[in-house]
Image (tube, rainbow, N blue to C red; front, side, top):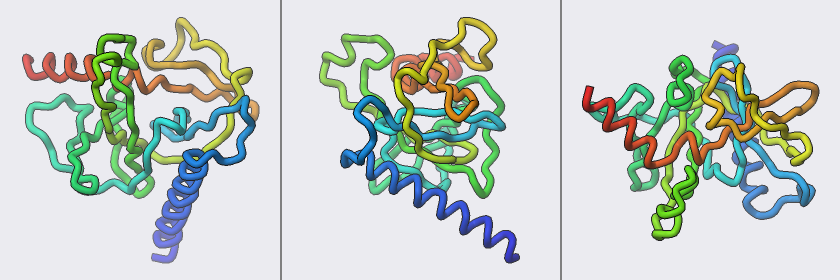
Length: 200
């Protein structure tokens, strides 16, 4: 009982620290001008990173309402302060193993600008950014990464489609896959996948 409670408390503290870091970044916390901040999280046993400026908040997994006839990577929708927000299994979207929901599983709420998939017409049409929740196994930390630490994505050998990789960041002697959320969560591509799955 004490062990389970300690783990729950640790998760809560981890999420609180990540939220504080996100808030600090949003208000111009003291990171070097040449660096950007990234949220580090796990999908399965692998660590990934995404720019913190795309992250709005981090939630414990709330009640998910399933939506019929959706692809397996769409886990449902949540009510976020009166707004209906789709929740995607990010690992499944990247064609990795689906994310099982456990004590440390989180929903990272992100905002992706229209047109980030390279569709200039969508960006210039005044389309509003889309807000999505992405399911991850756990959130680790927020770190600073300088542009010089990020190398181009490999053309071969990656576990996920290279078009979804913004680069490889070398941090503390290890490499992190920096995701391009604009491409992975592009509205047009998600709509195509949903329609294609429905047609099957």
